[in-house]
Image (tube, rainbow, N blue to C red; front, side):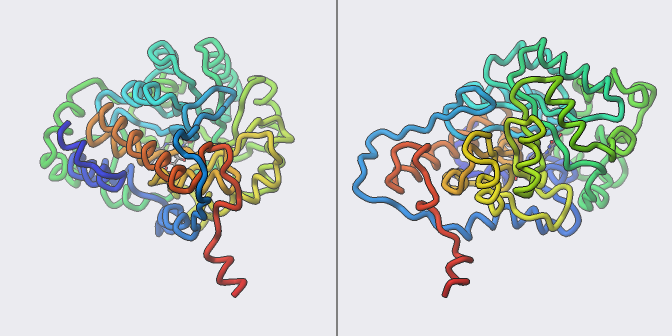
Length: 390
Ligand SMILES: Cc1cc2nc3c(=O)[nH]c(=O)nc-3n(C[C@H](O)[C@H](O)[C@H](O)COP(=O)(O)O)c2cc1C
């Protein structure tokens, strides 16, 4: 716990996570697809934007509240869905959700999560979103919709950038198997991290709690997640399926994985209420643009109403301010809270969120902006455009 307070930023939490986790598990969180170009670019693209401050505005109080998925959020940040959370810390999704509740922000639970959506909903009163897929078996997806409605979820995020699993070469190299098993290749790394390995390997078993009882293939025997993804994901999903899901759910729905203004417009026309501009944290199509670079065009395409969420690469509160100035409603984070979780469970997630909140508020104050909603394009300038103009 004392150590967590020594983390001055998300990068410090990442180093703590790397120390605590066996290398294959850390790499599963930290890594991306192919050459990890998009993974790196998602983060570095933020430094191409300058924040242009106003001066002599009264910033004695700074308002940060917003509305996301129709729910109040204390500040414009949400937690992106991440699967297999129990692998990173035994307290899993409930620890993350509890920290989200304390910070008054939206939590999203992955279909690939290790906690049943009903259990999550019971334990977490805050705003919650379920990340859904359109499976080959549409009946299974419809069943998820009904379960989410019954459990009181406020919104759905439909992930559309996973027609096949991305090529994660760190996982191939490490021989990572899901759920983790002691293979010869990983034995050394697991043995070096007994504080993770013993509880993880002997404690409650890894379970894709929301799907394992539903998917016959999974229930009938051990099978790698990669095989499972290959088998269940439907490459034929199209816009008609989005229209169908929007009708079935009839509530706040974001399409996660939108990259272009065209697809953003089409998402809204198909019944979605928002888009998550995302390349899956650089874990799917390597070479896809950085989300931050697409925000302004996406906002221009969909107009003022829909939620536009910038997902991926956020490592500082100032990154959130830049995304908002370009037109985002909010940002979402994956790795930053997972690093915190791995470093110190719920307290680690809390530390990540506290650091980001403080950074965001300090950024607004220094930029002379006393209401996050007042951030506008005038507060941000692209260095690349400046070079073009020179
Ligand atoms: C370990 C891990 C697991 C993830 N699992 C899922 C998932 O199950 N479903 C999904 O839509 N996105 C998943 N994502 C992607 C995140 O929702 C999000 O798009 C991404 O982490 C954002 O980038 P960031 O990590 O730079 O914040 C996962 C990301 C990570 C790092």
